[in-house]
Length: 506
Image (cartoon, rainbow, N blue to C red):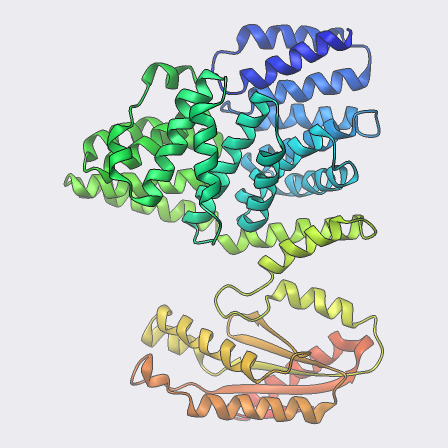
């Protein structure tokens, strides 16, 4: 098989990615894969089979094609294709629920793309990684990657794919409350509506992106001008068609056409479940629940609300943040001597803060302790636990308990010096670490915290509420920092046994 034949099939794969009826093209592609003698050619063809099929219902089968392509391409003469195969495989593995495999492949993609940043395929890998990080709720990183991919793409079909990804990432980021520039959504909508040569991109993706923009801006005039092109939607890939119907349903509900919205969502939801689109799945259940309630179907609205709660529990933001952190940490270890270090750190900074209290997360603390253990010198540690906190939740409710934890986190952070480490250890437990300091520093800090909680106006949360804290303090060598932490925990236990609301140094 010569390079011209491969190039023709590659272009066919990109054009076929938006459509549902791919049988004839895939038959040609499969025949070429079977006939390819060169492993690199076979890997490239497998990669583009996956590209063609990524909008279909079974992400696992397509991910497996990408993994096989990556294995064939790794170490060969097409490093850009290697990066792209790993990136698409990572995104598809995540959609299929294979999280550990997704993490490993994402690291491979980051390394390969960083090693060859100027190749066209590496730019496409960047686009695929943007989609993956959006799935992991690393929205700022995803937005930056998607912007780069869209701005650097030149070939029409690749530009359309990059525009679609950039639009999706921007919408998801803005709906999640992340401060990104909506102008990227305006630019991608204009490109897809006016300049792309692909009919499905122009007539389905473009209007869908325009609808997303109108919904975010409350532009009723644009919403009323939108028309659902059912014929073209039916020829689009299942993933694309489901997204488009969900967006148009959102517009119909915004305009007060709740029955139409319910009909569209009834058609979209099974495909959203099938393709593993968690963000859009959550949004679709929420939209249908509101629409059902508006038409008086309270049982149906309750069913959707319950299903929405189940999906959200399965897809917690903090869980996804931890996965993104793992990617950063692994990538940092593998490529400590290359420029990926900056990108890994940027992602880690975004996900290593405890979401409720604003202090460091347990994951961040573990990594910080590992770094401290290689240094020399003294360290002291204070371990805290709120007294009878379960009773606070039981008596006043979990919202009150969360408010207490938030205030405690602020008090701990405000009292710390710039070099001190403050983290939520778990539940109602907190830790403060003082590198280079002896026990007196930790004891003085712990007593300040105990006193501050004693005068905090807890009545602002509930007039009956009172909060106290117990603490344990220990000191030792930095190389033994985890042993010092365990000793502080023993001091905390002694404070609890001695009657609570006190600090015990061991």
